[in-house]
Length: 341
Image 1 (cartoon, one colour):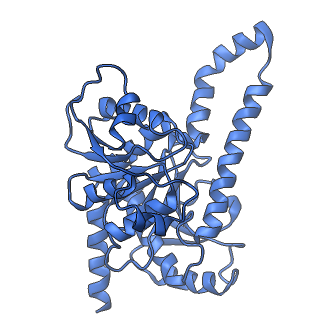
Image 2 (cartoon, helix red, strand yellow):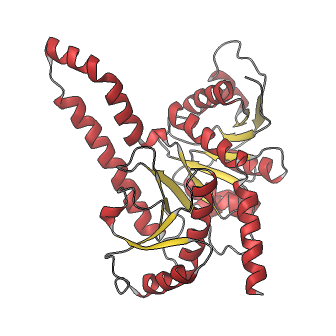
Image 3 (cartoon, rainbow, N blue to C red):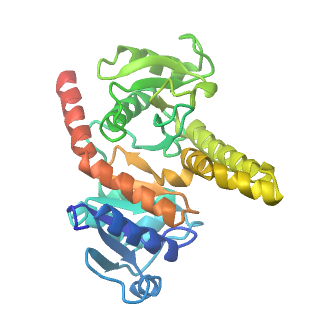
């Protein structure tokens, strides 16, 4: 498949399984998605991770002298290590040599690098990390943001998350008139702390979104909401818990399937169904989380990401570029700013 023109810069040194799994997922994405891949990092390590005689069409290695370790303080490391792979990858987007960037490395460093090099979109106070969850309704995911970028939030931050999430849900996830929910401890308008109460009123008054009210924890995977907003502290707890539950359920299914010949026959019959269960529940199928609110397309993956997750993240990045998410966000906030003036 020929290149579609979408260029993805990959931090090849970021993640627990870098660069081998990063390279494997990126090569698969090049072949199946038709994107141009720019692998950023130590050329020797990247080349060693490639199969022999790899075709270099639509594939480029961009040298980076350093990498940021998971135990480093993100902002200081990003400022000190100017030639770190995540910084070089972000610079490719800033210079318009790449359309999007992905990293499975230090998420804090990725956020810091994006803010310092790409900057915030006009009208956005705080970027948010949005991640997609499966729901009980097949083919109807829910986008949750923020899941870790902002531990504490003001009401207007939550309002901005809702607008950004609505745009992403509509144009990338294909949802018509996305239903927006505010994560809370009850459905009633009077529930929640002061920040949530004020955010509820602001969301209710915002004509740019389809706000349908508070969402309780049990509503997250119900399929009744398309976008759910919360602060990054709560969102990150929800994210980690959901990943653990998904893994537990998949493990229980493996353990409880009948053993022996009957089990093998039954498993063979159920194999297509089990594969669909895994696709709906496994976070690896969703790949990464989009950092919404920075002036560029930036996806952040799990540190434990392997090739399937890398492929999925690149697919999501391509979809964000193809659907002009950045341009739509820029346009939306220009409209909001002109209205406020």
